Length: 170
Image 1 (cartoon, rainbow, N blue to C red):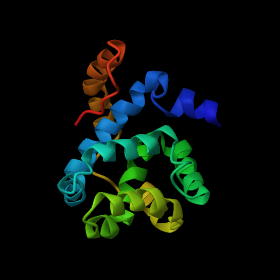
Image 2: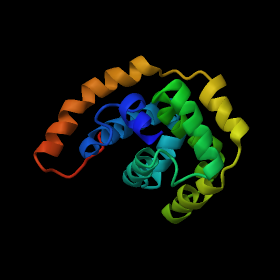
Image 3: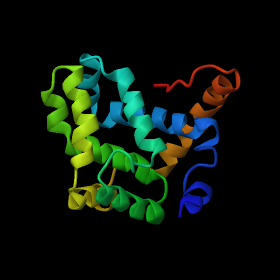
Image 4: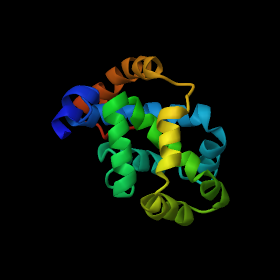
């Protein structure tokens, strides 16, 4: 299953020097900024913007296995196999929407870290997750993702080749 994910579902360079993960995290930040502006602005207002990169990075690198309940992770994997890598983005948006009220209610980084560390591990609402992954249509699609990958990838790969620190771009 993992070989199938790597070779057929995820972008070719997803794990190659983690360039694909960094590109996709950059795209996800753009999506959050556009489609979840209240959440994005609140995270920025309380100083969580840079840490958000780390959270998204962990979600993508582990394909959600380390950060969600096993049951919810397997639901995401099932739809990932069926629908392709756009599910990586839909899953992140779904998680943020599911815990939106908790995110918007906190005023400090410690409480926000608790949401991303503890609360997401206890999510178990497969019905809502399936709604976001299958039934809900998003404003972004595979074409949007691919255009952004093409636009962002050269600069990120150049940065990696120069030996610079991995940087998620906005």
